Length: 333
Image (tube, rainbow, N blue to C red):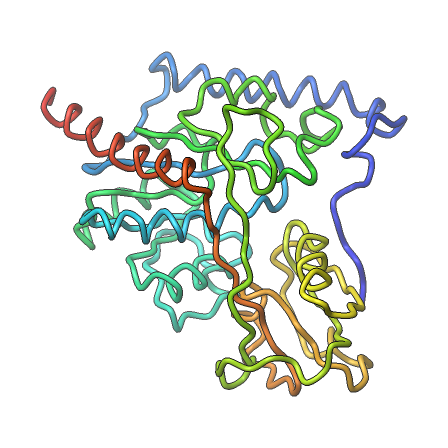
């Protein structure tokens, strides 16, 4: 199996990174001008008839954001709100705006969209234009709280609350913007958001904390709770930060042969050829793309985002604040 991952130089000061600094400066300039166009009203900002919470990040690659989105959606339900989730549908072929069903093809609408639909049972809409997706989910499903999975940089979508997610293990890499580093926006952007949630141990006391806790293994083809038949496993991961998954398995006592693929990898049968008799384990996000392959002796690990007590209270307050700000906006109309 081929290994495809983010450039190693994104994590350190290197000659390759320095050579890309002029392009990084150009990227930052364009991004700054685009952001200013929305902030000053030169470009229109679309506000759906609902509260809007954007849960995103300022880095490229996985941070554990989608499990936190699932947690937030469930918390909103517990608060008697009517939440729905929008996202780009990255990795899917569909172009336009589409409501996602749990049984949809992830190759069509994206793996994360199908996963969220399966885990929450809530309205989920994909679309590269998140503002249009937000308007659609409100109009078609009657939600009063839109949760955007990613989209901090999608300034066309108005938002009441912004929550930035950081992976403690990788942090901000070399601290440089694309393509010289992993940042979509400078670290100073975090001063503008309403909350910062760290997957792992925060380096800043003002940041919240959550962890991805393993719940159970399930057999891939039957979806029944079932542990791998051996503690020696092939671990396959087509996610933004595969090492986190491998480390989780090792902490659970498994002997891991790691296989890293690109984020949102489109799995085919040959990806699993030649792996021998060891069980294959994968993330739930990858599992939604592999069920049609009829793999034998294959399992996925279900995980749940769990904020600590203080961070959970802060997250729930963010959801409530989004609704208060929405009501205030509505009152001014």
